[in-house]
Length: 92
Image (cartoon, rainbow, N blue to C red; front, side):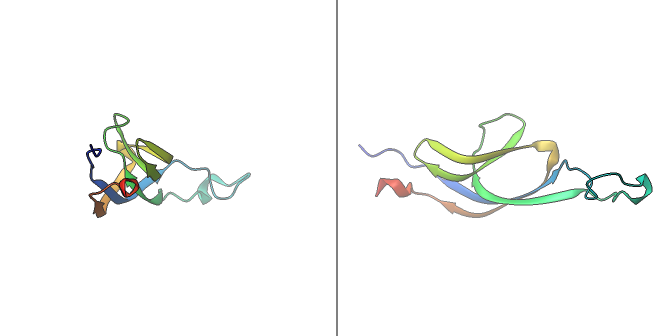
């Protein structure tokens, strides 16, 4: 019997990252950039794997995934589904 397939959502995740000041060393406090640092990540959504986070993976193979990032919900600025894959590619 074939394994039941599940849809995988390919997403673009925009999130606000914690970061060090771009100057790298001593910097005048008045010269610190007040703007947030936003990151764009693209990957396969792994829903419900870590409570309070949006988790995406670079690669998925069966029940394992690789290069996973977990972004706390409070840091997420935008999540856009760009495609859904309804079949498991490793099922032939």
